[in-house]
Image 1 (cartoon, rainbow, N blue to C red):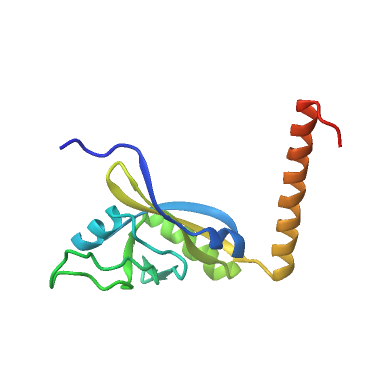
Image 2: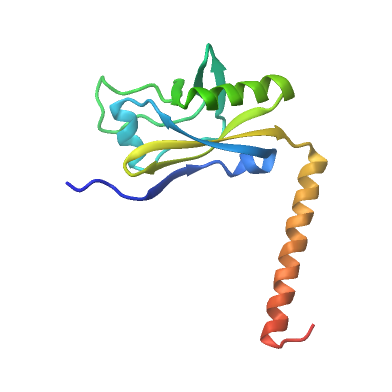
Length: 159
């Protein structure tokens, strides 16, 4: 069988971009069991409650829900177990420094297959306050109105 090519999105954490101001983004591999990979290939996962913790120089992913594989037997995995992330030592040290110094959080942004291998995109960012969220929503709405107006003008429509 031919090997998968390209990027296949499994799950995305849209709430993370809403709740956090993301500064840095890293791509990491995942250490998974066989039934977890089969469950992911069915497109089933949830990143909503996930977070990353650095423990003794290793990055661990907590709270990500990968449901049990439906055709699995006694070899099935636990749905919310902690999973090891595969990052370079330099990346782990950089994340650990930023989290300890500035009090930032590390959250998963998206989970996908890249050329047949499971990858996760994690973001380092600061939690937004409610007024930050309103401000970014207002900015997005203003951009949408500008784009609509430009579109109307290009079509020759009046107000």
